[in-house]
Length: 499
Image (tube, rainbow, N blue to C red; front, side, top):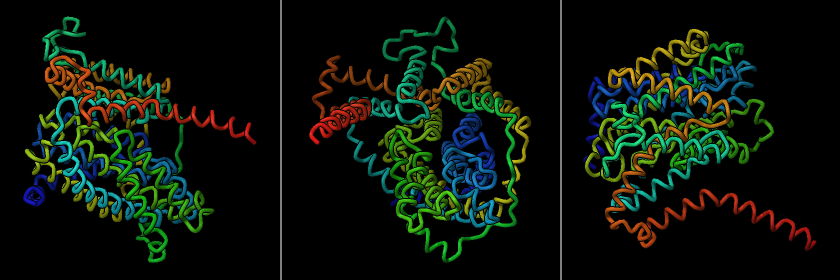
């Protein structure tokens, strides 16, 4: 109970409160701008958090995460363009409502559902993360190695591309993680005589490049697109009848989003799709979905915002990012010298609960912002793209340089941006690359520790039950869907032959 209360006292700091308000406002702007999203915003802001205290730095990144995820609904409803991919399903019913002159009602429902979903997931985070960390506290290096391998196997489904392309991108990230001097053998690898590479490639410029600069290059190809702005008089709180229709959908989607968020391979986008589909499945009027059903907005927004808290469970308790933005936050933890995992809830429990309470405050804050400021923030959608993205580019370059005041980091960010652009061009997701870079270092470190612990007899890992369990899960995650599909294909001809 002491860490629980001491984490709450962190919010007594006026400086932290001011920072959270500013980050929440910035996150809403980022989420409301088509093309930008929580991951890009967190990646661009990451280098500027390095001079902050750890609590303030990570709280700022999580504030961007929560508020930008919510703000994607603003553009989804008003211009039929989701500010973030997690709000794509909100377009299906939000925009039809806006065309009928009910944009205020649609945004009001999005605000309420988002706030409830976010708070629900954070309560679950406060309960589940310490329990999960306690269960993992007895993990030794072999168990951590197998868990990291399992996390890497989830890259097959974490991006937008095909599973094979996602795994290739993840393998490229792991390869990048091997650059530098091996801590166990002191052997230089892929440094090419460049002193800047001795310590490996830093997370920050790569994150800025693959998420920020590559998105700039993609948006440069969409300058011809025009967006139609819907006028809106004011936000309307849901009526009593609206609440009667949606409360089950909100509660159901909050649970779905929290669960989906805890899975290392999923995130808010998947959660919103499942939440929307389940809202339609259980609705008494499914024929209204896609034509302006208020339940569709509630189901989508409660699910995508509850996934933010869920994604932080494996990120903090196990060091396995639950979403692309959680991967950026994980990089921030590591840059500040914090190692997520069981030790965080024993040695740094005050820090963990300070982050939890900060996320709770941010969710309550964007309730107020959404109700009283969404009309104002909707105006940022009018910023011309040729003006917006050059500003993002400058911000990216300054952020990359600010890390170590090194031009080498700027070149790394530019190179990562170009690589990210061509990956997207050919159907590869950049998310597995970023996560592979983070987990690759952990994988190598834990493998080395395991080899020392087992006296170089790697096959002894199979004698450890938890290690074997995670390795079996990895095999099932990679080959299970194919084997399952092949099994059903074989059964189908047999059934037709029997008939």
